[in-house]
Length: 154
Image (cartoon, rainbow, N blue to C red; front, side):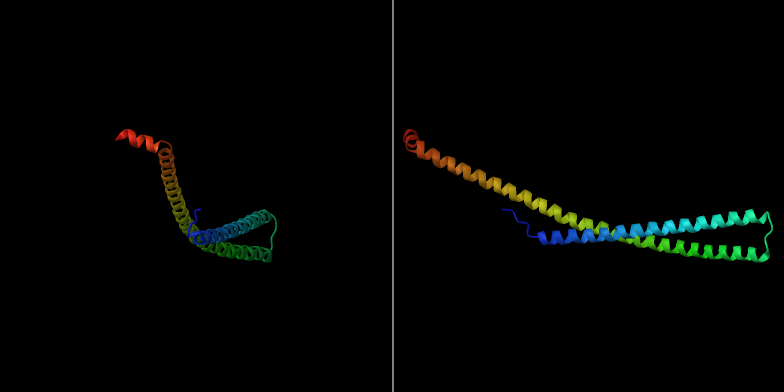
């Protein structure tokens, strides 16, 4: 029976790959949440600017204008901070992607090795089986016709 002597290593590499894949998926989801949050901030900023422009047509006090600009400034600061955070998360995601590719390569190498070993096993098994069947055929032939053939050939 075929037994791959590196089966435990292959199983370990599969588990490692699954873990890295989970971490990668979590980072992708986290990055998407951050991008959604950034879109929300930008939407808030656009809504606030539109409201400010609409109210400018009417009467706005200096205090109200100051409040609008202070809030816009905070939104811009949060937006810049979010953009920086997203850039950092994208870099981390790229590193995790490289780690995942490496884990997949390492697993694939072991699977290819296992496949080659299995093919060699079956090749050897078929060869042994063929030799054994040939020997059995020769033995049966000699038992049936062995004495007669030997006498006639002399």
